[in-house]
Image 1 (cartoon, rainbow, N blue to C red):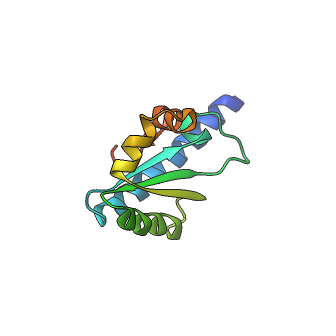
Image 2: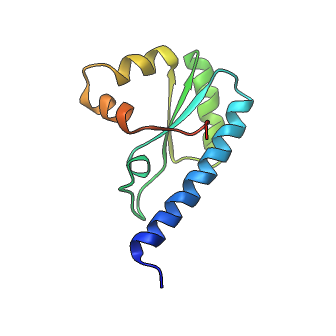
Image 3: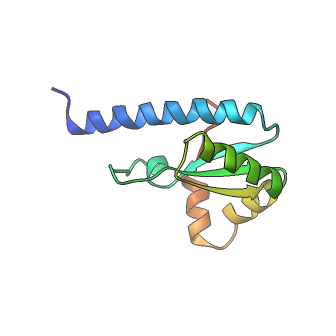
Length: 112
């Protein structure tokens, strides 16, 4: 019988595979965009009550908003934050410890 840790790891791997496939498919229709997973699932400390948090990154905020809507419509996330590429770079390297932590822990989903 598999251990609880093995079951959790299998479920996380399955969810990450689903997210990678979905994000890659949507980014293919949104050139120049990126999708990043952040939060407990990205860090590996998720539980049954955890949600899926994504960042939709694009050359402009308007394009990021469209990608965020597509991610939500596809059922890939519970929460999506849309940011321009310039804003994402500034936030993840800025002084705010919240955004620096997100930048350190986030996993890019649209690349294998």
